Amino acid sequence: MHVLSRKKLLEAAENHSHLGEAWDVWYRIAKKAEWRNLMEVRRVFPSADTVGIFTVFNNKGNTFRLITEINYQSRRIFLRHVLTHAEYNKGDWAR
Image 1: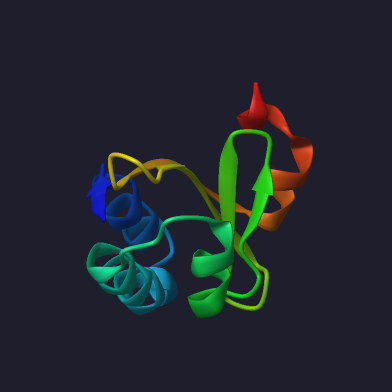
Image 2: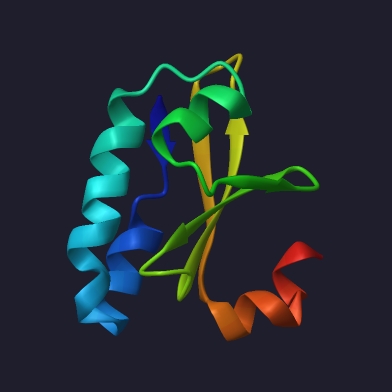
C-alpha cells in the first residue's frame, strides 16, 4: 500500500513522543501490506473499524486514533487525522 501524508504521523510523534515507535510500526506494516478489504486489515489490526468512509485504527490501548481513508483498488492509504480518544469522541473529524 502507498501511505500518503506520513507527515501526520511524524507530527503526532512530535506532540506525543511516546507514540513515535507505535506509529512507525503501523506505517511499516501498512506500507508492506497488500490489503484488498477490511477483513484483511483486521488480520493484522483486529481493532480496525470503519466509520463512514474512514478506517479507524486504535493505538496505545485505545488512547489514540488514526483516521484513514483506504482505497483498496489504487492501493493507497490517505492519513486524515491522528487524534486522542477525547478528540475522536467529539466527532468533529467526521465532518
